Amino acid sequence: MRLLISFAALFLSVILLQIGSGGLAPLDAISGLELGFSTQEIGLLGSAHFVGFFVGCWWAPRLMGTVGHSRAFAAFTALGTIGIMAHMLVVSPIAWVLLRMMTGLCVAGCYTVVESWLQAKVTNETRGRTMGIYRIVDISGSLAAQLVISILPPASYVSYNILAIVCCAALVPLVLTRAAQPRTPTAPRLRPTLAWSRSPLAAAAVVSAGVTTASFRMVGPVYGVEVGLAVNEIAFFLAAFVLGGALSQYPAGWLADRYDRRWVLVWLSVAAIGTSALTIWLATAGSTAVLIASGMFGAATFPIYSVATAHAHDFASDDERVELSAALMFLYAVGAIAAPWGVSSLIDAYGPEAMFTLVAAVHVILIIFSLIRMRQRSAVTRTNYVYAPRTSFLIGRLLGKSRER
Image 1 (cartoon, helix red, strand yellow):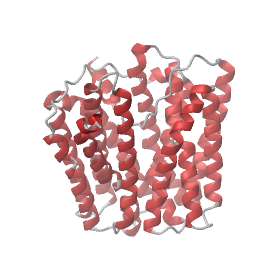
Image 2: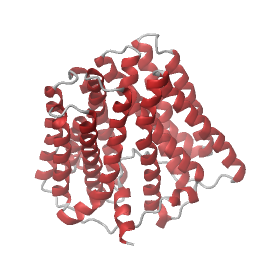
Image 3: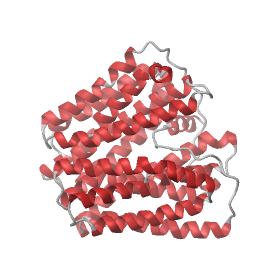
């Protein structure tokens, strides 16, 4: 309880930030359809988010080093709030692309500040408990963000204003906390090729995870509308995906620590293909069936990033771990940037089932590549599996250092 109280301000800011910024993606997708945006334009909004996310990863550590954690958090939150509020002032796909880049930058920057603060303040004795509580807080905020869409009318200034208010409210707990700000550590350098040199399979798997997760989170609402879900049902559709992924993390970790991680990745990919096919098959079977399929799809695909990162770290030395984590996140971002626009284009051309067809095809390729890699290298002593939520933005510090060398 004392641990929870000591970081209460940070955790409350995380929940408010998740609700405010995390609700924007589904609201944008539904509002875009209401305003006559094409499916490709809606997909481009999702890609723009990850472009801003990537810029935020690079800029946040530099800003923290210049003005400190609290001021950097305030600056990023202000940018995100402006990006949300301005949506209904300028109703244009191009304008919304720029605004979504601002909110993506906000998410990356704010999480960089929060996680840097947490990591600097915890000890080895409390690190596991602290990060466990943080993961619960993060997932809870993500679930709430999806559910809040069920009560917000699309293409409404009031809806965007509510999200902006919640996002702005995230400022209050963190900037008023009495806890002393930590110092920003010196950044190592970014080496994107490190992930491939240590484990080509892990590198391919995190790209696949980026394509899969970004496609569903950013274009999933379009799929929901196409298969006949109501607005409030789309909220539950996305929430089921997040909840399924959260529930599968522990059993996936248990398997990954006891068996060859490559086989765990293979069977997760098989499950991703199977749940993709199931989702397509149940598209016309009613909303309950679609929600169940969404939860199963999340359970199959969410753990892939964490299992892949654990497999990569099996081949890394201790002094490479920070740089390797950042290299893997770099590859995830590459997949996440490309996926939403590509998926939306396929939906335009071939219908809503094209999203899950693409995901299934990506995992077929990953299975083939996994089997090839297993013939080329034997299993090694494993590091412990750790749930990686892809909000640890060490990549920014590495990008900053790479520009200095």
